[in-house]
Image (tube, rainbow, N blue to C red; front, side):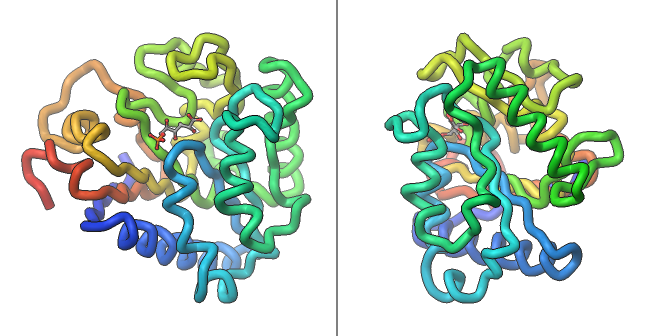
Length: 254
Ligand code: 6PG
């Protein structure tokens, strides 16, 4: 379901430049169409790939005042902790671009995991009610763009292979206390929220991702779907941004 594309780059530099161009074009489109642009980021190496967006010409040409940013997942640690996805995004991206601070919608680090998940969902409900975040046909928040990374095990956000959280449909935001990737306690968007997005960029680099990319984008379909293979956009477009190493196990390389 949904449109899917794959772009492969020789260097990290080229990948970052292309991701910046793609994001800038979507920013322009959504701001023209509805006066706002809602962007969700993950943690991990993704943030480094956003580097070119913080440089010229994008630093000057993007209408940052219209951006609203969110996290697809967060670790339950203080915002200044080394494991914090907020800190990662702030240091590598948000501190370098003029997005109004009250449009940076971070997960509350003063609450426990269940409390923080509920609080984030309440904040999203408010933003849906006032029209900043669009509502999907099936009633979930529909973000303009999700910028996601994928773990070497095929996890996306904090949705891990074979984990019961993958089946949650009655929540927008939930929590996990037994994450196989440390730290164990995390907050995450649920799969239907990811699948309600207008655009998803899946950024994958390095040989460590090759096996899963080969399985996810190869022709042989198996029943044991990894979280990344459960991305099936309701009415949106998924684009993979990969380097050569990440597609090295793909049977028909583009
Ligand atoms: C997290 C991340 C996570 C990440 C992937 C990929 O909090 O752990 O949000 O979902 O995006 O694990 O990480 P790498 O790109 O660093 O492999």
